[in-house]
Image (cartoon, rainbow, N blue to C red; front, side, top):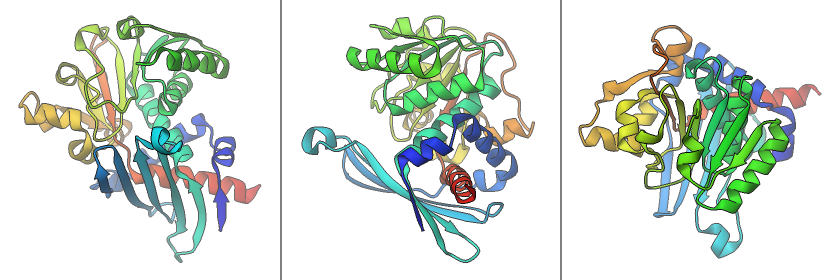
Length: 315
């Protein structure tokens, strides 16, 4: 059994590779993708949760079990990271354990890749400017994914509640991606003129404002159980999802809009499988705002882990 840490994962799983993997998964395993996600949550208080996500691929003959935690008070109380966990990769033909992976590294890359794939399918062809709300690890990966998916991207603007975090983000991502990334003092400035807007926070209250989102923008919003999108943005955007079942079960902002009778479940236009297979249409008008909501599924981990395992096994 191999133990595969974050460093090895990042060295062997590029964003371009992962976007391609997600495209293969959504194209070739639609029936599993569209089945009800199996995610079990144990909550200890309002700021602490442990999730268990099992998933399997008949195509790859691989199974994973992911145990991931989010304890928001860890840094202040214990000087520990907010997130942690591991993923176990199993050969489903004989139940042998193949490897144990650092969960956070896999999750960051495949979460970014799924939004990169959505951007490839839904954003306007020659998008150049990206707005970013949030400055954490996932915001970094989403910006990288958008830049990989659309090589027309030239600049990005980032806003964070903590100005120093936004400045650090801008410096690091300018160096990493070769883009002109600047930190903004106000959210409106980060959103202004954005062709693509990334929303990657853990906020329990909306951090977007529909009136600020430019016509024709594509919005990527990630994460379960939070409430980062304002209701008007959900209502007036053309909504696409990673999986309908997952979003309807776990995306609090979308479900609040449904509960408030602002939209129905039919407001969801399509998932990524339907777009890739040509079963549903994506963007149809230049000025419409497309919104991609992603909560994540375990099958994404199966594909990412299997790719890394096969690559290092053959080295």
